[in-house]
Image 1 (cartoon, rainbow over the protein chains, first blue to last red):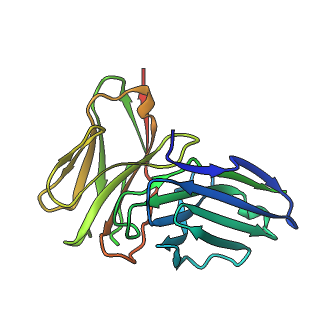
Image 2: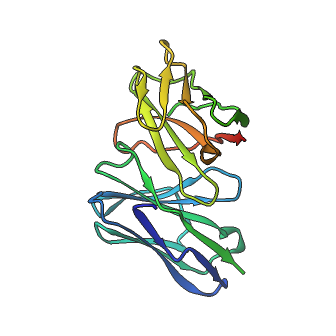
Length: 114
Length: 111
């Protein structure tokens, strides 16, 4: 069982829909991450939050909007996605400073865009 | 951050040691070597990391060559549950430096 919980596990949405992915951890970690993973490819970093502030945006399109309401919760808001955005979206957290301590990953949300 | 090179795939007999190599010939002095693995349908899992000394934990051992240009992850007694993609990553511990997964090695443990 993972200590980083992602919901939903699967999501199918149309290109005009608005949906959100949720990630939660209760380990007291202060760095949280979103990654995107296409089939048979390694995870690719999208966003990093450090102490609830966005510290890294890897030039992600604005149709992806991250939010960190508190130290335990990370959301990814989705709007007007394209079919190529279909992928596994992974959330991770680490103890303090981004990338310094090992990251703990959730099992991801598998997103399909119709 | 330094680039890593890993074999695309490897097989290992169940119960034997699995030795996964990683080449990082351009590693710099303050870059650590990290290993993660990803079992099918799960998120990546941290295994171990080290700077220059060999490291061991309950999951694996990490052997880093003296010149630090390569390393080997050792799973001492591979089980079927160790079948996964293993990623070798090098990075500094300076904040702000990103974390890039390479293509990894797909390890298959054979009964």
